[in-house]
Length: 180
Image 1 (cartoon, rainbow, N blue to C red):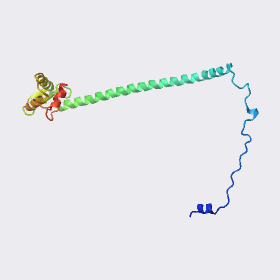
Image 2: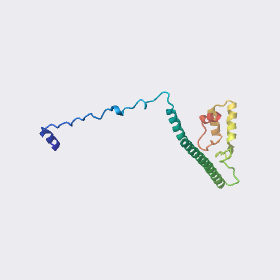
Image 3: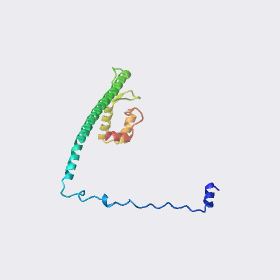
Image 4: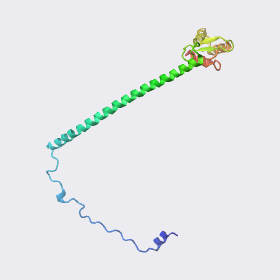
């Protein structure tokens, strides 16, 4: 058994509660009350004078804070403009990098497939070249003649025309998506 419990059991003496506080001085005495002159009068202009003086004192502070805030907003706008210009320069630099890389890889005599809107696709089986516009015109012509999407996909696959990515085969859903 712990010492605390032993002491608790062995003590037969009750503790005495603390003495009560006297309530003297806890109440307002008559002299501490406000007099009638201190109370608000409904027709008094003194309060308005105090209020207008306080407003007059705070207006210069408000003006100072407003000018500081305006200066900070102008600095923030200038900084945002610089950031936007830097991003534009960065994007232009990346574009120049890829254009130069494209020129190095393909050489200057070959067509630029990254910027040329008529991307050239090659049929590996027949060795013929088809542009994207050629394939789209074939698809549109067959649709006008009443061919279904799956018939067009089979035709393109039989003729050995590669997909635009150069991988995989033509599917009816791909033709449907291109027609939309």
